Length: 88
Image 1 (cartoon, one colour):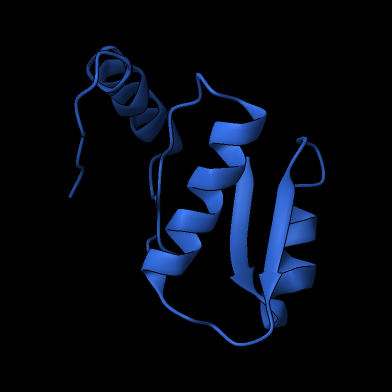
Image 2 (image 1 turned 180 degrees about the horizontal axis):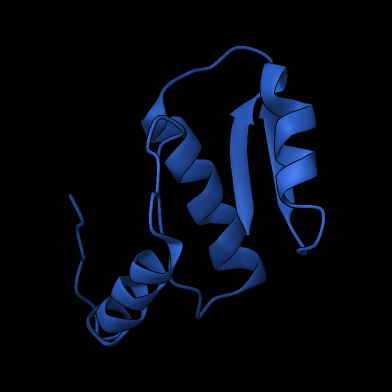
């Protein structure tokens, strides 16, 4: 897990990722989604070249975690074969 966020969310992110091995990148001044996505992609490519990125904004609420997890697993074969997968 690579999480890019504003420093104002530090405590929340640390609490939510405590049980996972997470890389947390904090921005003093939020730039925009593109910079955050690029930062995560560069780190993932360097540390885990076979990684699949799932970019999500902080203003989304996942009401049914089990369904969300199942949808991610269904999308994985498409993502690993070079396709861009969009949810929404």
